[in-house]
Image 1 (cartoon, one colour):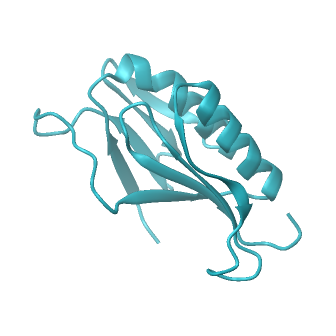
Image 2: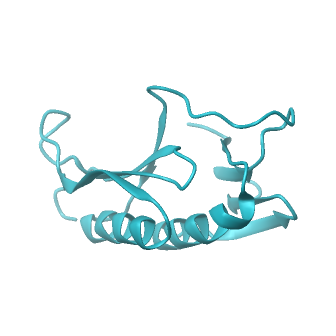
Amino acid sequence: MYSHTTIGVDDFASAEPFYDAIMGVLGHPGFVRQSEGKGYGTPTGPKVFVGPAFNGEPMSVGNGTHIAFIASDRATVDAFHAAALANGGSDEGAPGLRPHYHANYYGAYVRDPEGNKLQAVCHSRHG
């Protein structure tokens, strides 16, 4: 559905361990790194870039904006949440079913160290 997403951070040195941990849990390897940013995923497939805003201005967190990553199973959602909290993130919704979306919707919400809202979600009942 998408080519890439960029997540703005002002302090990449602090954000990198957080993103290495959660992207590792989700199976998205780092494929390119520069002094102020990193890309996760694959060069020709879906990917996420983390780094400073392209225009050089301070980053800001969008109200109502969040990025949801597909998790292969519910254990991965749990591991995503745990990795986020262990690496400077904060809880925005513990892992669990959200049946108001659909019967098998299992997700967890976190914020990165700079306030960006992220989620991992498994849509399978066999997770």
